[in-house]
Image 1 (cartoon, helix red, strand yellow):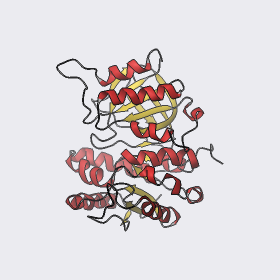
Image 2 (cartoon, one colour):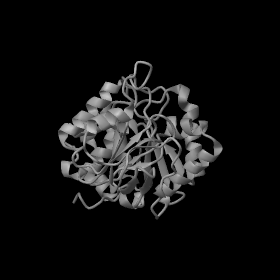
Image 3 (cartoon, one colour):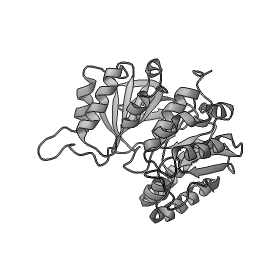
Image 4 (tube, one colour):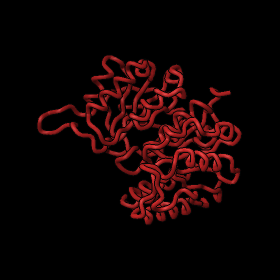
Length: 326
């Protein structure tokens, strides 16, 4: 990608509530400051909805496929998350992605797109901020210096020919188990990782060999997180990864508190058992606020004790695939 290229904001899952139109407008302004042209996809219309979705799954798939086939469109960013992507995973034009790979940005339900399209085409998906609640919401509440840092980071991610290198760490990052490793970054919202692996489009198990698994969770209960991690253990994924990075949890009941329920580190280390891999926790990605970008499929270096996570490849160039998919 280059400055001046077209980025399209699309409803890839949930609808646009009229109350959040100002946030969407602010998101457009952020992308324009980065130097991109911005267009809104037709389904991104305030008040349009089908049940809990922006439209019927087939309509969302048709719009996404049109964007994937359009050579002028160089990136697609999801307006918001939701609960719709499972309804159209089998309708996506994977040949269009193979012919013209382009970044798709978003998190939450969009994790399914990143994981499944990486499995099917080798496309590097960007687990990064959504447009409306992210660029137009959380970013606006951050200090000006943080906003400027994020704009530079995302601009480099999308258009820079070089690897980003070390992501900007903060005091919130925690070493839950010391160690160093390098591997491909794979992950997303943990419940969507589990769902993706339950479909016929699941990542082959050996793709997790040496991988750095990243995940975050929003809502539910601490016992749900424990259960999802147990699914990853039973599936064999935890036996294959070389490291783990955990995002900032949000609105999870049963974590810590006066009656001494488990903390998130305790849950993670309990399920990992004697698997001696580095674990870096409380990293800024996910539902809790502005997201550091986590490109699915690129190589990273993790040093949990030093609290560093470095992107070793330029993400957009890597979006053309890693050679796993022919």
